[in-house]
Structure formats: structure tokens, C-alpha cells
Image (cartoon, rainbow, N blue to C red):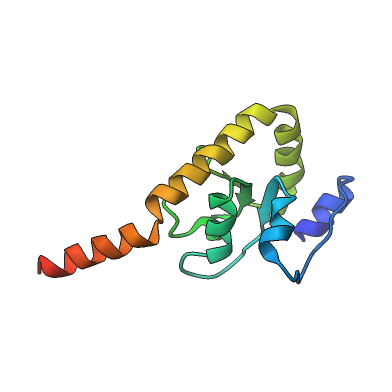
Length: 128
């Protein structure tokens, strides 16, 4: 549905189901749309996209269990019909959204650092 919405709004959309090198592919991107509609837990690809400095746009499920805030570290939509307006706003306010992407990157690096998470878990387990 998200792809149809974007194509109907005049955007060229390529639904890339597989790439040989994810990092190289994503290095050419500026925005990642995350149309995740179900699931639980932290999504590794969302963390990877945010920590690389991409502006992430997704559903509530996309950012579930990620220690970041909508509008501050990423953009959230509730229905795919909202995506064209978000993309138009991004084009008109590039500096604003570049700042959100940068804040998102810093937030993920700070709050989802594996070493820090493990250290905190170990610290919590020794206090019991």
C-alpha cells in the first residue's frame, strides 16, 4: 500500500527486496522509509539506518523498543497516505530534517551501544 501511495503521488519507487551489500546500497540514500506493520522487538535494520545518519520515516512498529522520539530523532506516520506529504516537507525543509537525522544517529549510538547495554545488564544482575 505504501508503494502505491507514493507512486500515485508521482514518486518513483523501487522496492528493493535484496541487495548484495546492504551498507554500500544504503550509503547512497538519504531517507529510509520503514513500512513495518507488525512485529515485536528492536529492529536491527532500523538501528543500522538511524546510526548511519539516514532520516528514518516509519510506523510506530518500526521504532518499537528503540530509545528515540518521533519528531526529534525520526519521523512517524500512521497511514501510508501521509508519506507523500512527509517527503514533500523533507524536500522543503532539508536542514531541519538533516538535523533530525543527525540527532537520531547520535541517540542510537549513545542509547543502543552494545557494550553499554551489556555493562548495564551485568550491573543490574549483580545488584540482585
